[in-house]
Length: 207
Image (tube, rainbow, N blue to C red; front, side, top):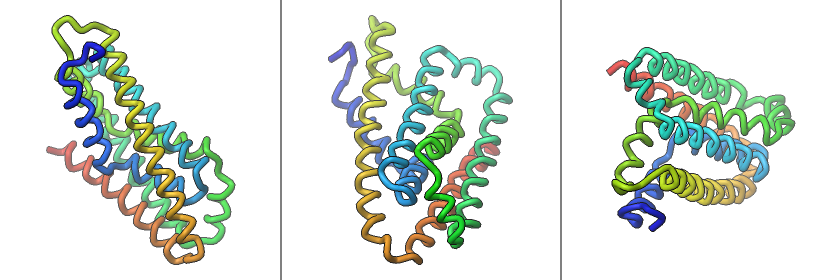
């Protein structure tokens, strides 16, 4: 279908990859818990744009450049480590502060869009992933149109899944809104998770 071989396997693979939680998932849920569906969808847009940029970069052959010059890849990864840890520490420092809560409420979808985009771009290895993933489902005669369709499929399924995250996250946040300590705990857990993702990326770089 659409020039894609093993179409069903392709769809199932995308769904499985979406179900694996990552820094992007934490960012989306944190944005939703703080300011609702609007900011949550802003974070979704940032995550999708970051993934699309990496897919496009993979298609254009940037992965070959990064493979030839690993120093560029490592530099970008260390920037990602610092950014993820900084975001995590920021959540830990401000989660218990009423002033921080007021400031968070003043932040719009654009703020969380930029944060999610930055988080999405913190792992340049995603380019390598797409470079290896797409050919698995292409025929010998497949061309640019097939690649474009593959990218659209990944983006569409990601949008559906992440919109579901925002909807469920918003409903859960409303139920827990009266429990201030749970809001603080959630923010701190999100901070710890982001630091954890940053440290995991750091250990993978040093291998």
